[in-house]
Length: 103
Image 1 (cartoon, helix red, strand yellow):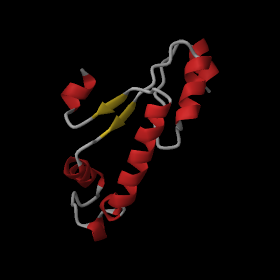
Image 2 (cartoon, one colour):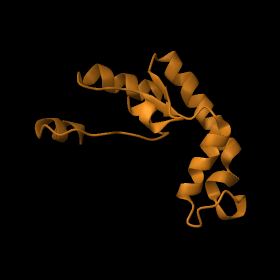
Image 3 (cartoon, one colour):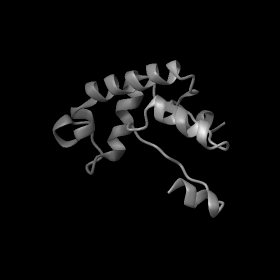
Image 4 (cartoon, helix red, strand yellow):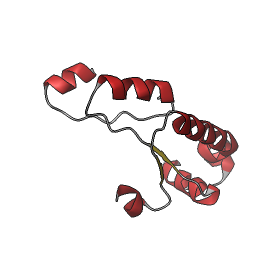
């Protein structure tokens, strides 16, 4: 897929928790125009608030919001991803403010 995009001179964003530090490092070494970074939210309450938007009912009530219900596990996964990013020297962007993050 990436090779086809390169041939067509198109950009792509790959995202998700499945992208390990080693996988990202391999992409960087294989494709010279790769810009790796990890986006995370350091403040726990701000992180939880973002999940209200993902809920059909726009709520932070755990029984109606699967993300809030699993929030502790999500934070554990985020911390693991950050540690791996540091190990592979992948830049980490704290996304507490979207304007600052994009800057």
